[in-house]
View 1 (cartoon, rainbow, N blue to C red):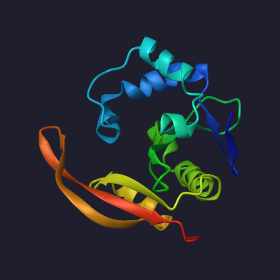
View 2: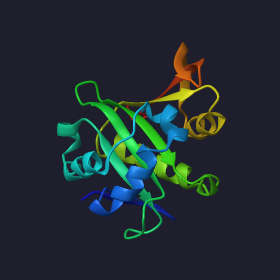
View 3: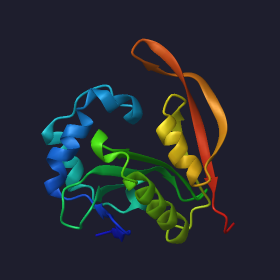
Length: 177
């Protein structure tokens, strides 16, 4: 199973013990806007998802890792590669630190740096992209810190609380290409 080690955290493959954490995240209406979710998930569906989480990124076209401060500790957040496209060597990337209290501890920054490095070094990706709402200043600051550049804005892209909001697409090209 995949584990990436940083200075103060681990990115690790999902485990059956992560069921309650993922259940909590997937059913938290406050973060549905960043996960494009509009309906709750049952424990049954999440259990099925976890049973298939072992699939290779080339098969599943995504990779979801738990952010933990120790290999055996509970997850604090999730970081994903999605829409993995090996033909064009690109993927989307997203991150969520669940507890507001943990969001200013540089965990997101360390996790994002680890996954960028893994994506470019081990998956040989040419580019990563992130979709970020223009109101999400913390995510914009995080991704631009790593060199992601805004390449466009999708007008009235997301309907949030009855109001259409713009979403930007940020892109990072692998400097090795």
